[in-house]
Structures are given as structure tokens and as C-alpha cells.
Length: 196
Image (spheres, rainbow, N blue to C red):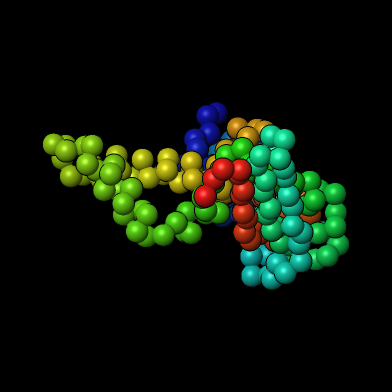
């Protein structure tokens, strides 16, 4: 049975589990969403969404220096407890995210962080190249291009540089499932010599 991306995304929104885990659960349950949720619960992945209200006030500052000191990244990653913050998996995640930021140069953490004026400017530029097409077609194309823009500029939407089958959101979801806590990438700064 072929499982579509929209079905995987829907299950992910319901459970908070990573995309690959959702795909595996849907395949194991022949596309039955309720059975897939049970499958994820058995693996302990679906419980993470219940922790969304918890405070993530512990954490670490990860860093990465690349290209002989030409690029550097600092990233703050938060979790619920000091115990998890000091754990090897959490520390590795912070380092991996910092390395990813060095390579991919995101501008924002998530699409909600993109200023409205930037989104409007991008929409105008995208629509300008589509003159002569019907308005509903233009709107659909612009929405598709905007989604691509978010994937290129927003950290959580980017494909992970070490495994382009998953996004940073998926990587974070896998860690959250593993440690059983809410994980948040709070902020980051990327420095490159010669850049303003």
C-alpha cells in the first residue's frame, strides 16, 4: 500500500511524532490512522504532543566552527530537565543543529517567525512573474513557491544536511520521543567572516 505525504503529515500533526515514524506506523497499519496512532503509542512517540504545555527552561548552548574558523554558529536548545540537557543525545542534537545552521544558513527558526512584510514582498515578486495567468492559478502557484521559500529559509522546515530524508522538525521529534520531553530550538546566531 502506498502512503501519501498528506496522510503522513496529518498523522504527524495528530501525534507530534516524526515523519519517518508516522510513515512506518501507517505502513504497519495499512493506512488505518487509528491503528497507526496505537502503533505510535506503543512505541512511546505520541505522548510528546501531550507535553506541549510544559516549560522548556533547561537546555544547552551548542556551537559549531567550520571552514578553518570562517563560519561559526551558536544555538540555544531547551528541554524540561537538567538531566536530559546533560545527556549525550541532547548534546549531540545541539551540535548537529549548529552544524546544520552553518551549512544551510536559515534566516528564521519557523515560518511563523518570518515577518509579514517579508512574506508580502516575496508574494509580490512571485506573482509579478506570473502576469497573464488567471488569479486562482497565480494564488496556487504563489502558495507553492511560498512553501518552498519557507523550506529554504526556516530552520524547522529545512531538510537535515546529514539526512535529506528528514527535516529538522523530524530530527527534533525523534529526540523528543527518545528522551520523553519537550524540546525547543529557542534561538541561534550564525557568523561568517566578511559578512555584515
